[in-house]
Length: 169
Image (cartoon, rainbow, N blue to C red; front, side, top):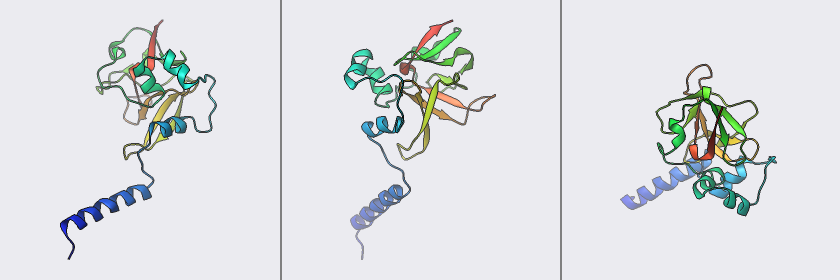
């Protein structure tokens, strides 16, 4: 007869094996940083110490370690002037303000990036598969893109405001 403890242990172990077998995993910050630029040489490269010196601690955590800022904390949520939202790591223009919309998620959202501004990679963290968005010039983590946005693209680029700066037109 199987005890309750044996049953729960077996169930938990089976779940871990099933999840691992399906290719889903949590990734460490080091893995995430490596994967975003796997096989990619970015135009702007710096040492970890140089990034830490240039960026605020929160910018560093998000851009270089693939963190996420808390929802509804970015001043860029309420930015409605004409201009561009640029990478806080290398100043590359990423999104035109005309493509910004209120998604209600608490993060600045856009339906389309500027041409040749971003790169994407598969993010398999937190037991799900998402499309990660990064700056194509410096590789900084910006956020994720989802298929629940408005026309004309149907996409929602859900960005960390701390990963960007606004430049008025």
